[in-house]
View (cartoon, rainbow, N blue to C red):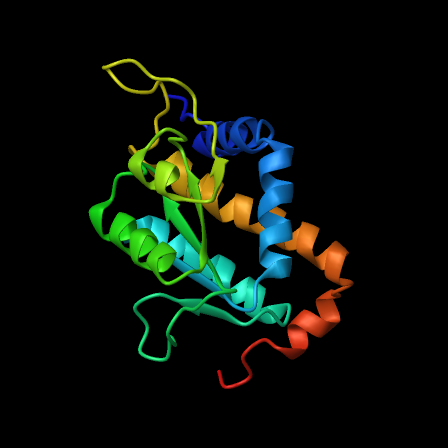
Length: 183
């Protein structure tokens, strides 16, 4: 019996999604990050794990970045930016965080698979992760449901980081100097 090469399937799926990102949406988010005093990120479940990785990369570049819910996260304020990660765009806790952020005068953005969702409608900026359209039976992908969004969210974060590195003149050496050294 021949085994299916799932790695090729997964990498092709991610490449197809990320290759179809709206470059103007990405540019708008890069500009918002550069204009922000501080950047906060939020999400739930596995989306939170991916967006946390993005916050770490921002910190490596010298951007003051925080993860909502951590004990050392300060109060958000006018001039700050919140970036939410939500595949469905409907997660109640994430929506509540976006709404609370807007009420405090900070800008809001979401990276989501659903550009017409509640969270997207509540945000100032939206980056849509263009997942393949599926029918009621679901996707033809062998991956567990939600995996393609989360993988793509991680890659979108890296795409944003590369764009920011170029704009900020940040080098890998500078970023490495900010990497933890307590391990």
